[in-house]
Amino acid sequence: MISLFSLILVFFAFAEAEDHESRVTVYANRGDNITLPCHLESMTPIFGSRIRWSKVEDDSSEADVLIDLGIHSKTYGDFLDRVYLLKADDSDASLVITDLDVKDYGTYKCEIENGLHDKVIEVDLKLQGVVFPYSPRLGRYNLNFSDAQAVCLEQDAVLASFEQLYEAWKGGLDWCNAGWLSDGTVQYPITKPREPCGGSKLISGLISYGRQHKSNSRYDVFCFTAGLTGRFYYLIQPQKLTYDEAVEACKKNGAEIAKVGHMFAAWKVLGYDRCDAGWLADGSVRYPISRPRKNCSPTEAAVRFVGFPDKKQKLYGVYCYKPQQ
Ligand SMILES: *[C@@H]1O[C@H](CO)[C@@H](O)[C@H](O)[C@H]1NC(C)=O
Ligand SMILES: *[C@@H]1O[C@H](CO)[C@@H](O)[C@H](O)[C@H]1NC(C)=O
Image 1: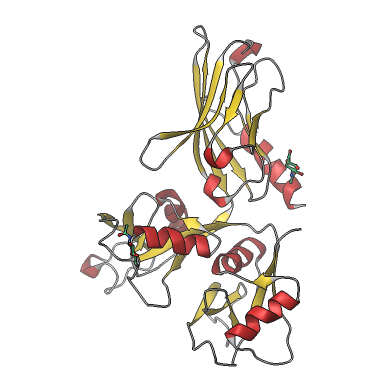
Image 2: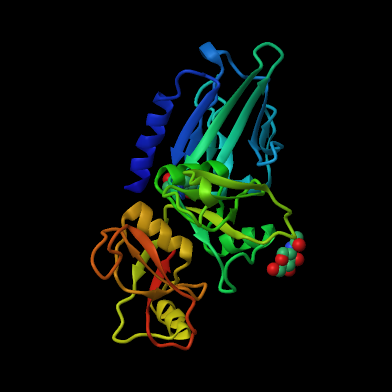
């Protein structure tokens, strides 16, 4: 059902791919198979052309995704054997990406070269998802850039881009600790200006420390994760659990202990709501509230953070995640 829904969204995106013919936005969900459109006008055959699809990286360099020379087609890197040309008709160089993942988010470039009708089309691939701030058990401001990349991956997420954080800020994200973004800058989003967050200027917006030294500087991080392909749930148990018992309990249930990214995705995309504090894989305890109410999260819909308690404490439940079979 989710797939059908996103298909409709994708077609919607095609229909809206209006004013510049050379720039298109496609919206999709994780796990989808999607098509990035690229056509020559008026059914000009692309036969004999060189077609190159690449992904524009954060530093503006281009990484090859697929190169097609008519007979030979080669795929690269993360896209190896996961992409192909749709070739719906003679003028079609659209790219199909299967099993979409969070790291596929970004800008793609389609270049058709045949000497006569060279053409470049840029396609922005956007994923439905959520940005969340993360700081590790060690506490605030402990991550260099490569640590930041690693902790996002551990939470089933990737480093958020500037654009994703900006969208999250427009959606109301307010966070007073600075975090790494994928472009190597360090920023934080403020929607409720206040003295301790941004000084006396009381600005609402993304407050930037600019580009920071990737190995010497330590901050928190903003991660991005997209909708779930598996099932996230609170495991009903007769009693509260230690961390180790929590890990075991999910395993016995044919699942794994959920990651922080799973909880944020379930909360944001599915409106998951549960007022029970539960262990997550990183050793933190949290609970997702989408209907604010007394004693849970009275003023806002949020993933509430209880902390990183002693793992031997038998005070919490557990959230599990069952990947799609
Ligand atoms: C996506 O495509 C792959 C390979 O073509 C196929 O095995 C898979 O079932 C498709 N997934 C969806 C969600 O349509
Ligand atoms: C980042 O910090 C970690 C320890 O937190 C360290 O092991 C790693 O070498 C550092 N990375 C770089 C590129 O300096």
